[in-house]
Length: 420
Image 1 (cartoon, helix red, strand yellow):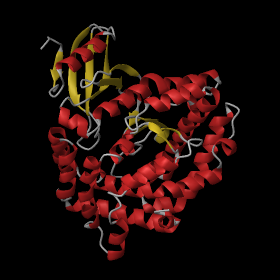
Image 2: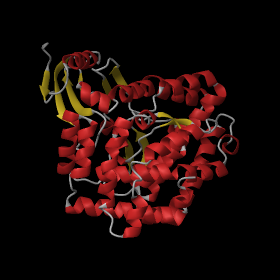
Image 3: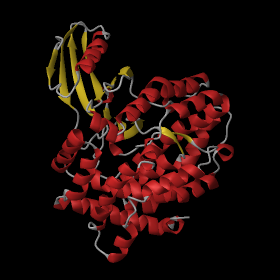
Image 4: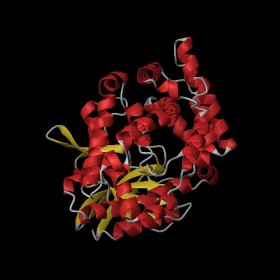
């Protein structure tokens, strides 16, 4: 191993990855004395990569970075689609996001309306040694909210505004530079679709159906959730076949609490910044909206605000489009948004049941499950999720979310659109 001024825990990082990290660190011209590797967050805060925070100490100043490091184990990489996920993030940080902000600047969009994303210091896109080196947004006052706590109305609206701006720029790009948009959508890989066409992969999810059924208390609810996780891959293929690309956008693809950072000013949430673009792909915009709402909010807040949230998203979409001479009613009509919410609700129901099993576990439970994934890949992960019983508090939390999910779907009439 080459000699670097590295301290802390940099195990499970290949020599090529360390070499690249050192190269980017030296490019910061800090006259580095040492680089300290620290863990990032807790088990369960991140599932798609080995994430570290590094502190760089130098004669010319100090700085911190976030490192996303790909696993090099071949079994793990194949079963978790690592190459495709890191490729997507590479495309987003080096091509798509800079282009979207350039569109905004050229149109004179006020800076406070610009898409915000972490500065990318460097990306090594060399399988199996991928590394992504990003700005540590914590240094500029961004925080990560508690994933166990449902998002409140004001926070949801903040995220919806970010979605609206982000999605609007796909419509702008389709209108102004269709060839560029086409290039981006081709480059971004739909990992969910890849999973859905691989029987060896989808069969791993069947055991989770029984695990979810065991969490709910009455027969009616058990019948509702039965087979909904394993069936979501059939729903994905059906939606893919029926997709109306006129309304499609480049979506974030994994917008849950830990993938959205918030800038707090004077005690209030002011700005949201999306992180982790590994799931980015062309898709219908309601997938980002519904994914966030049904993974991150509770029944009570949805009951009072769901339809006004949709109104707010559409009004913010129109506001962002107006800077480019476009109108939401022409680009993505409100009634089309309503229709798509119903159409995509079945898929989001299955996804939300699946994520309930992961996101509601406590740190110790999650650590065991992630350890199994890091050593054996997806099959072992799914087995662990199905067989590792939740602790009392985790199960209570998951059950409440599932029951709230069922109550919302019944109230909004979404079950009527399943299987249609």
